[in-house]
Length: 250
Image (cartoon, rainbow, N blue to C red; front, side, top):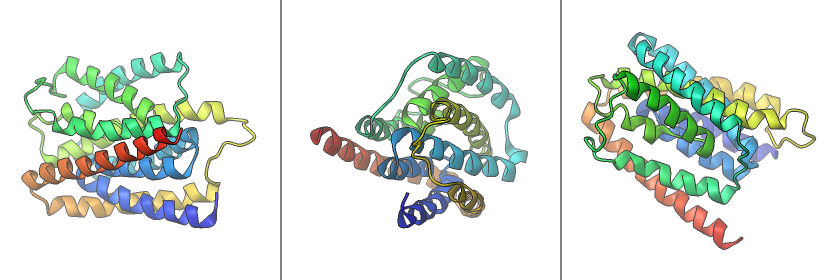
């Protein structure tokens, strides 16, 4: 990977980790788009998973006192089932299909608040959350807006939402790394960035999580939801346009 590309992606890691630190999800979709543009799909998925694991892990640690651990346990059960199902299948998406999914996923954020009456505090819903979110994460690389559907009806504060979602996303990214990374083991050309990229990305992801947390403290719950929806909508339009261009070009 060219040095300029590496540094550009490292800048994207810092920026998107900061965005995720504020909104809990939009940064991951931004980073997935940038990585898919620069890397082969499998390498982009593994790199995204590794960086987001650090970012979400750091965010979860920073806000650990707000994590709803009961939800995490139930989510993990559903996540394990989804991972087991997908590991039994063969799935090799091209860039056009990944951008199509990236363009569609953000619109989940506009699902009416009471449409499905989902609540991550409920046992069955938390398990379903783990299954569906981990499954979509492994297919599209991201699943933040779907995860949000399970949290919009909870009585959790914005800090509890960000902290708990960070912990659940860390689990989903571990599954994604295994799903796309195992076939790359021993491959002559994995397409992955060099080791120094990941070493440099780790502190940048943690710095972004810290900076985003500071911005979150200064934001109201109303603005938190409003900005999340509009940022995701813009990303959705951009990625759908990119998918159309790639499909048109064959």
